[in-house]
Length: 169
Image (cartoon, rainbow, N blue to C red; front, side, top):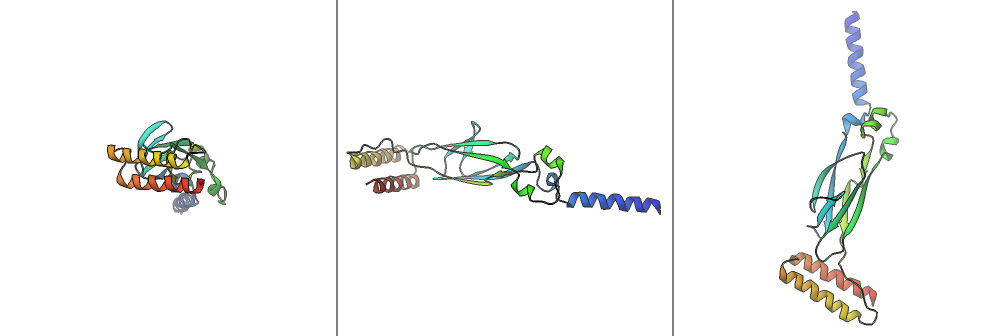
C-alpha cells in the first residue's frame, strides 16, 4: 500500500508541475517571429548580421534585445527593435523562478513585425518642388530600367513620391 501511495503522489506532483503553467515546458526558450516589409524583398540584418530578405520567419531567444535594420534600393533604411517583455507572464497566478532564469517567462515584442519602407526622396528644394518630384520619378524610372527595382516596387515608389509631393504642396 505504501508504494502505490508514493507512486500516486509522485505522478500527481509531476502532472501538477507540468500543467501549472511552467513556461519552460509550455513555450520554450525561443520564439518564432514573423518579419515583413512593404515593399517586400528588403535586405534584413539582425544585430548587424544579414539574415535574409523579407518576408521571413526567424527563431529568436526570448531573453535578448534585437535590432533589425532594413535596406532596399530606392528606399530609406528603416530600423526596428524587438525586446523581451514579461507582461503576459506577470499576469499569471503561478510563476516559477526557473522560467525567469531560463528566459521562458518573456515574449518578444512585437511577435510579428511589419515595416513600411519610405522612398528615398532626398532634399526638397522649397522653390522647385515640381522639378524635385520629376527628378525623383526619373531616378525611379532609371532604377526600373536598370533592374534595380521590380515593376511592383517601381509602382509603389512612384505612388509614394506622388503622395509625398501632394501633401507638401
